[in-house]
Length: 178
Image (cartoon, rainbow, N blue to C red; front, side, top):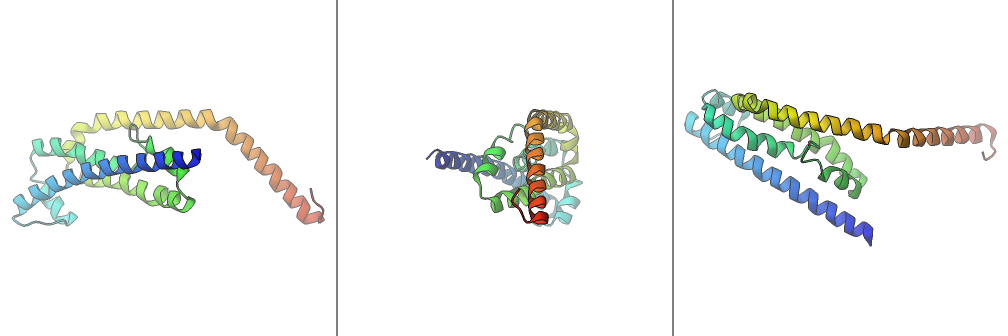
């Protein structure tokens, strides 16, 4: 059926985008891990140790590795141009999976992109900040445009819901079907 094809397509798109993002973030984090192990003289995945070592990361290292770390985690967030998986993925997923994804995974991606990227690679974050601002601006403008486009539909649905609630309330109070 068409629904099955759409679900398969959405699932494959979601898996491909998130896997590519995870691989990109992993490569960047391995670079941060290796550089911090060289600086500290011992390997550690502790954020405290990584933050201590990051004070000694060279500017070139930070400029090189901030983007893979940030973009890898940002692929989890519905941020342009990585957002194309989000609508199809949420529509095709069962409600519980969609809620878990929206409630946990997307927030985790945003926090990790900001906290890990900016905390461990601040000079890289500063250097790439205008590009990130451009991505955020495009994302926000698309979101606002979609809200304006969908507004009449939601208002119509809101009115319909209000009518249904009013009829249900009258039926409960009078005992007669509305």
